[in-house]
Length: 199
Image (cartoon, rainbow, N blue to C red; front, side):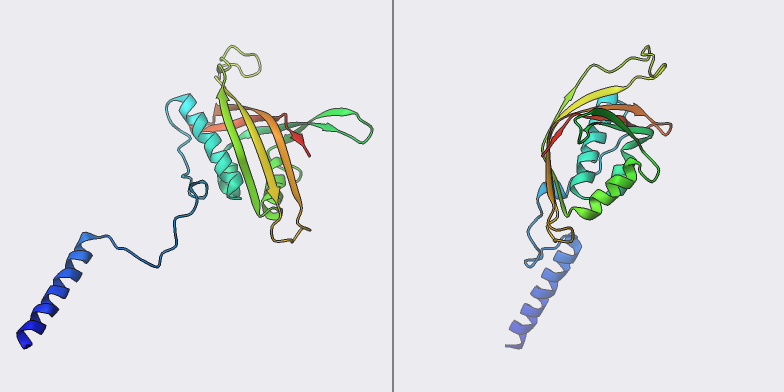
């Protein structure tokens, strides 16, 4: 009887040692894995291939929006970033608005507030089309090659918590992204020309 107990204890000790040495563990109480869009990796924006670096930057842009991550978002923007959109005032006048990256009314400040107000931000449709890069001979950016990508998207914004009266907005449409290499070698968005329709 004593030998049998000693054998069981030794077998259990060996099993514990094998599990510890294996370096892996299983937790039956662990929650199920979250949806992949919440676990999207932060991709390198300094790939040697311009198209890969640009695609990674735009993937990080989507990640930042859907995860309210202002740090990742800021890293997607060039120091000279400009956000462009068309505004129609109450008299029906159409105006092209250019918003700089920094400043009190800059894009980073606006996006930070957007992330604070809306609990759920989703880009359910995010279809990218790469166009022919703009060459260094372009007078707008001499000596620089810019990547040019179009995005077909559906954006939805929802205040689920009710902190802002359960506000929700949606936008469909197209955006044109022009990206260039920053001084540190990372590809970043230089121009975001939004051509969406809000409702």
